Length: 215
Ligand SMILES: C[S@@+](CC[C@H](N)C(=O)[O-])C[C@H]1O[C@@H](n2cnc3c(N)ncnc32)[C@H](O)[C@@H]1O
Image (cartoon, rainbow, N blue to C red; front, side, top):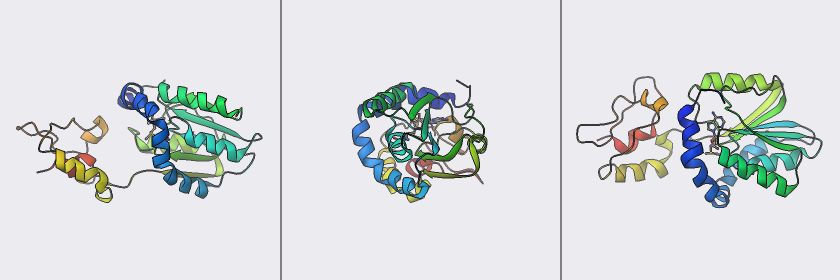
């Protein structure tokens, strides 16, 4: 695989991926309503070719494959080997030859030129080191006039379910540093007392580390 997104590759292969596989059923049930809204917006039709970006354990890829039918095609791409292994097993169990998976970095990997009628993602487009380059790569894979629908988080200010618990534990714990790409957006992430502190640099995107850890 390409050299981009090394930190994410490690994270989703060694840490989050195996945990996600373990809790896959519960996680799917939890986030399926969000994905369903995006699926309705995308409106995949029978016979279409669809790319599922950051497909993880394949829940939405399976649903896309059902909707495009056996004359269509769905490709799920992801960084995480353990999650893809689960996705492939589910596709075999469901008997869906129109569905396949590849371990590819969606930011820099070869996805084909104008190969898809539609691109979809459920929380899989939020982790790119270089978002403009990633979306450029995805745009090349989409045919002219193709469609894109994805679900991703709003800024921390819109997500008290993350920021409130972070604020509660920040005085008690030494928080890990933010991911490398977010460190650039954080003017300070560790104080002398050892507690994390993070504030947003001018013009940068908000960081979830900011809300919980600033004092
Ligand atoms: C929050 S999970 C969502 C998984 C799946 N879409 C779902 O809804 O169950 C994010 C997924 O994005 C994948 N991912 C992160 N960065 C990626 C990249 N650059 N290229 C491909 N997949 C990526 C991760 O490996 C992980 O499976």
